[in-house]
Amino acid sequence: NIQGFIFDLDGVLTDTAEWHYRAWQQLADEEHLPFDRQANEALRGVSRRESLLLIVGSHAYSELELQKMMDRKNRYYVESIQTITDKDVLPGALNLLAEIRQAGIKIAIGSASKNAKTVIEKLGLADHVDAIADGYSVEHPKPAPDLFLYAAHQLGLDPAHCVVVEDAAAGIAAAIAGGMWTIGLGPADRVDSADIVLPNLMGIHLADLQTKLSR
Ligand code: G6P
Ligand code: MG
Image (cartoon, rainbow, N blue to C red; front, side, top):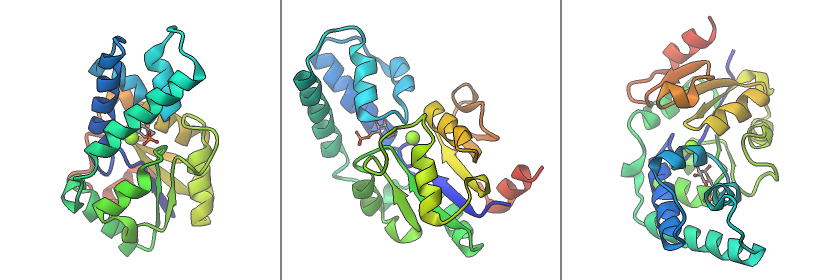
């Protein structure tokens, strides 16, 4: 039985995955590095540094140049999230969070982002969750299970009693590696290893998820 839900943030509770993509696109364009929406799929849920390394590929950059590019991308991203409000919580998310809390089930956010706390505050979600694991919490990023294990630990729960909600292949892999249940959001080819695959959280109720996971 499920005792805790761990939600990814970007692309699950809000549409910041799009802002991450646009910031990387701007950086790539300025650096004349090939990049597009298709290439961005591999960056979903992936840490800032790993994302940049995927974009630069075999091009030689010094550590200082990489640092400067990461800072620049983050400036573009931070600028784009300034206008986030509680209206930017994705459809269905708030209702599901309320149902989970009502049922006495714990909730954490597990995001690789160092901007997660800012985004959570702006969305007005801070009071809806019991714990936050973010880009500062652990050393090894998704697909390592560390971030979600940290979140489960923060909730005081056995990972086997937790379900992770993710939009990224790297995130589903991390949750499976951590021995957790998985709900994948988005096209099936991206999250097809999840226990449950849904397009998004619209109209999704806790009872339905519990039924599907107990089969
Ligand atoms: C999340 C997003 C990724 C992003 C990563 C790091 O996992 O899905 O797109 O690269 O966080 O975010 P940050 O805000 O620390 O650069
Ligand atoms: Mg995500």
